[in-house]
Image (cartoon, rainbow, N blue to C red; front, side, top):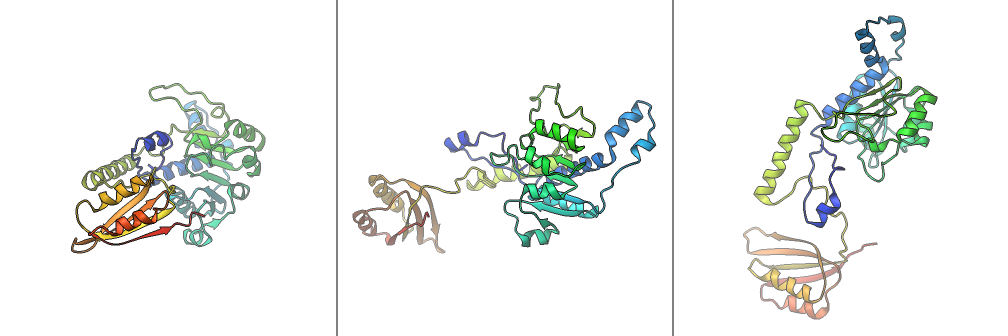
Length: 332
């Protein structure tokens, strides 16, 4: 799937290892589980099943469901999973509101969603809140006392993302004080692989329903993820390109761009890099595009600092260099 919080990106990057993900391949599966939890919370399906298995018939007790049609579904995080949840919400006749860092009014309108100003705005105006943001330093503990205080009494909270998003102690208190209904596929402390024991203060509370971190665990999703992984590997083996790479630098220390139009001959770039190295300047980024016919090329080399005039003159004096220019970048 899209998540990569279990990978040590810092160490991978330090060793030049590319990390790729498979975004969207499990979106439908996770959305389906989110909706199974929403429906379970509304109709208290797990409790009804448990009573039936215990030989208890309680039509009167369970005949007081609130229903979803006409209510408000709030989605925090509107990537592919969030959008899939929203689409199903509209099919249930719910008003859908949402927030995402990059969501614009125009994009929200195209999705049939009312854009909120932030997570607290969603919490305050939704009957059902479903979390679909990535787990990172910005989202850790986002569902805290303040967030939960903003939620409506008796509202439903769904988390199929990562347990780190939720302050579980604060959630336990809010369940007791506000009568929240909660559906969780993820927990802050999940058992290690192979460990079948589990304990959590939330799961024993009434109207808290949990699953075993199985959001992406459908045959359809696993096949789609495997297919995407194979596609990424094949592209790398064929071209050296890494699709969906998540640990490329978005910003570098580059402060100048050296642009060199040159004949497509061996050794031209090597001579340029030698001069750059002599100046003690690091190459931060580069590309070398070849023109039709393979006679000429253009190298754009982003440097950590400018090259002095003498070395620029030496670059231009190369018999295979057509032109060379140096541009200072606006790193404001």
